[in-house]
Image (cartoon, rainbow, N blue to C red; front, side):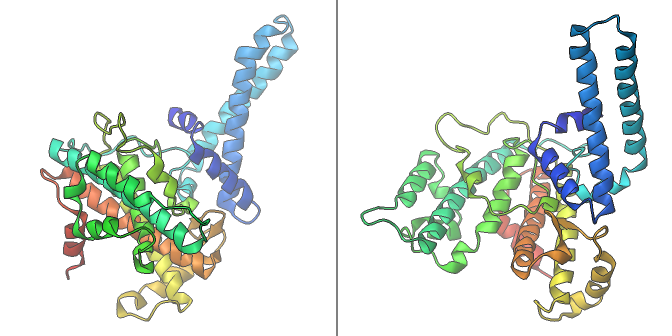
Length: 349
């Protein structure tokens, strides 16, 4: 109950509640979760009334005490019953109502060198993502006459101030060295990957208290790069790091989402036939279709997404699955290793 009460103050809780209310007419999972949260909020309200408002009124009024006591008692009973009997049905919300499980196998702390490396990577990826946002904006908007884009200068200066210019990977060095407005479309399309990497790093370092679940359909968010990472007086040093277990949980969830999205893409004929997918994709898709069965993507199910949104969710799920798997290994390693080299090894047969 404490974990649930704490999550009330987080944005993800209210977004999950809103999604549940929106889908409650067609999705029995949503109806159950919406009912549970509504009863929980009623219980909290009754507790506030009893503790803070009732003492200000006539204490000798027995009927008022009985009335509020009834609200408090029924709210508590309903909450406990629903919590115990419907725990399984909450998995569709992707831990967004109750948070991550508190009990898990112990993990070792990250080594100082790995921690330092990930701090540097967070600043570098944030800078590259900020540059990507600028490139995409310049590509799709007509700038006022006389306006000079200075994103390259600002971001490169930030990298130099933090001693990271010589620590860029070759592909990153090529990107940040290009003149403003000169990125190719292929380079701009890497934004979802950088966004998910930064989203995971910010969560791992505790900059963000929660990771937006795939059930909420996270979009490419360039504001993640504006969290002042690397600016003077802002440091990730000293922040407690998450453990490998937390990243493995997100890796597994993203892997399930990626499989479901690919099954849907194949069912719609949006990807080529492949013996690697044919054996399970059609069956997985048939088993998943249904308003109360399918994986959620915001207020829609995966089957209800338009083709463009489905492709975007595929990119996001794959990016999260890969980088979460990388971070899970990196946090347990004695020495840092680059994501590019890890990805190359992972692609080997």
